[in-house]
Length: 206
Image (tube, rainbow, N blue to C red; front, side):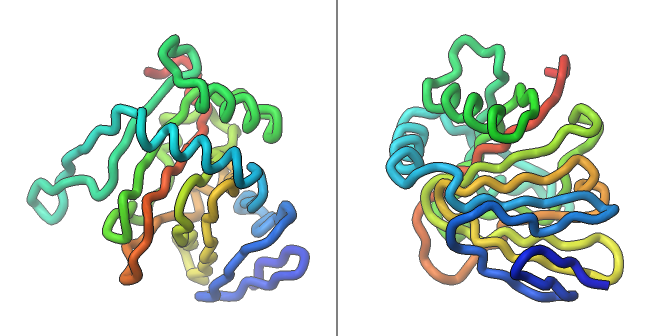
């Protein structure tokens, strides 16, 4: 079985470098849809938002259990709800633009700062109990380009590798979280900082 989308065919364990203009539907079948828009933001706006957020957000570190020991979370984080009176201007602008483009009532923004090539996020899916059923997840990338790996949970273990360039927006349907994991792996090559803005619909949950 293959995934198909205009100009691309994705086979098991294949990789794609998806640079360039134009919205692209990378997956669209019974398991859900994934859509990539590399030029969602113009370069000047993407750089302006990145610079402001990198400098002014109160980034927090975290700890987690891994292999029966507590370790540092390999990235910095922050979170805002749409009702937060302290939400910074760039995030208000980003929320309005993403809501308008996607047509979803996003009310939560999770921020992740990948400081260099050593920061990462392990393969995971969003916890559906924390999300409003049927609503998508949108990921806006700012700063340095990092590769996202999207991998099917069941055989055939199909894989997408998406180069998350600055200003790009990745949209994943609610259903894809049942069938695919996504991650930002560590890498050997040096790379500058990247900020990811994750837009979700959580409803009345804290």
